[in-house]
Length: 273
View 1 (cartoon, helix red, strand yellow):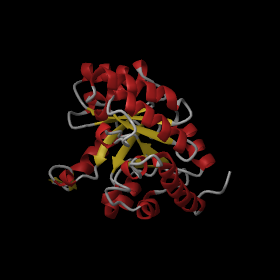
View 2: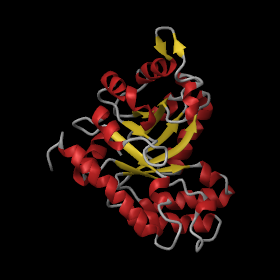
View 3: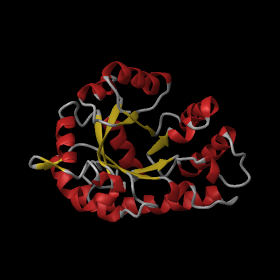
View 4: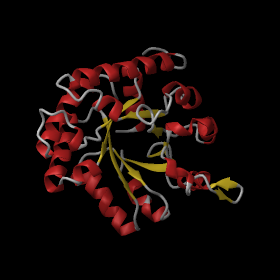
């Protein structure tokens, strides 16, 4: 999906919600089997309940890889079930030398039909550039993450900058706003405005809203642009809103609340289309 197509979907749906399919087999409602088949059935129900309210899905590959080849198959079937009308993110956080990165790019962009993959940039340009060679595909580079461990490296001084600032500045030169996004965690809202000032045209994938306590309103007011520029990921707060048989209805209700908030925030900047 191209940048313009993504923007069009956001403006049409009045939503920049990304639903994270972190489908932990141990947290599935009790009437699902605790295996890859149960994960796939659960995902299909969540997708049916939320597809009209979101513009993207993010699949955290660890929850599928941990189930072996059947889990990988369930991930591929989930991608197929979503289809091509949503922006599909492989949250795989790959990052390795060039020839290996090239194989990862083929795995997620050719063998499967993801639009984007999260990438760890700390091995430098050759670990990211292979993902930028595929037309219509995206690398989502870890910038400033929402976890507590961000303080260990990302928030350490690097000359006159913080390390995350140096990383984002360098990574931005490898691609452009058409093929490179940044992960910027919602729990880092205090610096979100400054980051947006430095990268006015790049999309940000923002985890940390919901279960991690980040504020949708605060992030949006600091970083929303006239073309949206944000994908707000919510995982557990939507997909595990209920552990009972009403899980899909509760997921839809939670997603609707986020979408309605987003519509209000979008309407402050972007006229209805």
